[in-house]
Length: 287
Image 1 (cartoon, rainbow, N blue to C red):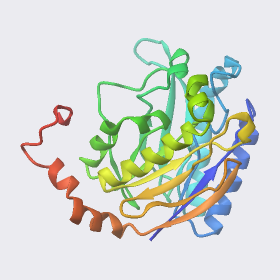
Image 2: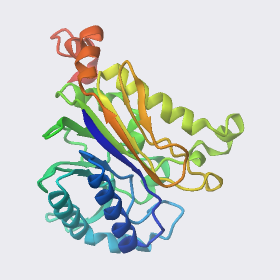
Image 3: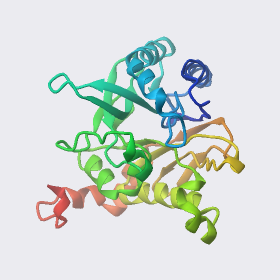
Image 4: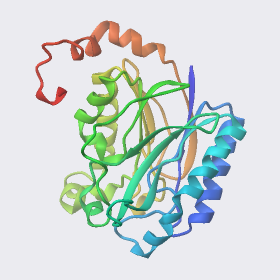
């Protein structure tokens, strides 16, 4: 069994230090409750979003300090951490140009960074101020104490190809920090269905779990529904569907226990990974 703490965190705009301190308090609470893994949402440190003041960009050059702090906490508490995503302002050592990236990390229970992922599939408004992650390399799965894991971020959920690429490398768990709101459907979508984005997330998370015989961990921001927050943080596995979630859209934490043995059972029935490994696999995005 793997015990996962979903931290549906509400970041206060621009209050990086306070957000960081509150996030660490949640992680300590998760560790005390026996969690093997604690997951935070996308942009959890700064609530950096197109609707907010972009002056915070310069403060994101300090990303390494926060990453080191999370690594020290992981070691102290003996817990694996995915600290959501961290907005990073970097200077290219070759060109000298600044790049602003949306990055997720997996830190193991000894404080070692096992995996790093720069968001590739940017949400439309995000493209105005975030640089797309490296496109000359694919999605990469990596070894962790919990098995082979892959990282994606938010809108990546809409691209089954990203999951396939990770699963073909043996990923058993795909972790997806997100900043996904009801307003993302736009006025036209909300007229059709005010719950549209919750429907999207619920359907996509469970579908990705079934179609890849993988555990999918989706951790979203929390907040008031009248302010457009969707919640829907959850863990899904094949056969079971949603194995546990944070109820409602407000900030909070939920512990979800997952029997990872279900993945092998589902693969025995669906044989998805077996088909993906075939030499005559017939979808062009394999290579």
